[in-house]
Structure formats: C-alpha cells, structure tokens
Image 1 (cartoon, rainbow, N blue to C red):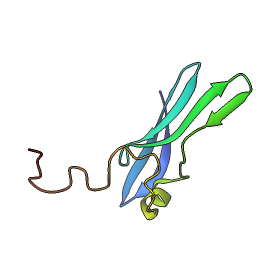
Image 2 (image 1 turned 180 degrees about the vertical axis):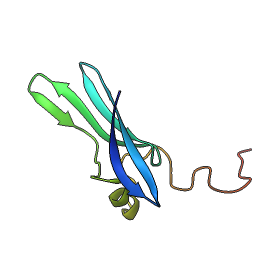
Image 3 (image 1 turned 90 degrees about the horizontal axis):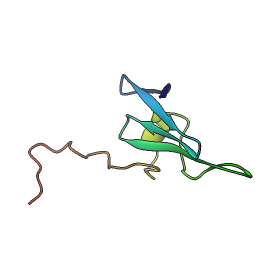
Image 4 (image 1 turned 90 degrees about the vertical axis):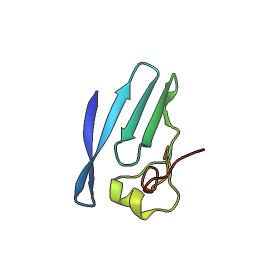
Length: 83
C-alpha cells in the first residue's frame, strides 16, 4: 500500500492511502473516509470515475462532499444513537 500526504487540515496531517490491482486503483483519505480517486484500468486507457480534490483543505471548503462515505458530523454528536 502506498501513502501520500493529502495536506494539513485543522493542524492535523491528512493522508491518502492507495490500493491497487490489475483492474483499478483507489485513493482513500483518512479525512472523513473520502474516496478521492477511483481509476479503472481499461484496454483503451485509465478512467478516473470519482470527483476528487487536490488536498483536504479544498475538500473541507467545498459543500459537495464528493467521494465522501460519511458526513462531516458522523460520530460527532455526543451520546447520539440509533433506535
């Protein structure tokens, strides 16, 4: 697994984690579980099928939540629960 800095946000370093095989390559950030890249490898070339950002700060300043698995307040509400 390859890692790359996704930039500083709120005084913390965000990281991109790359997983790859012969059919695809995906970049997942530890800043809000964001899929920043999903490249499908085809015979005619590689196709990125996910909207992503250059850094975590750009993602944070956006209001579209591109590639986000969960919202910004997931597990951020004290004593929250599902019934």
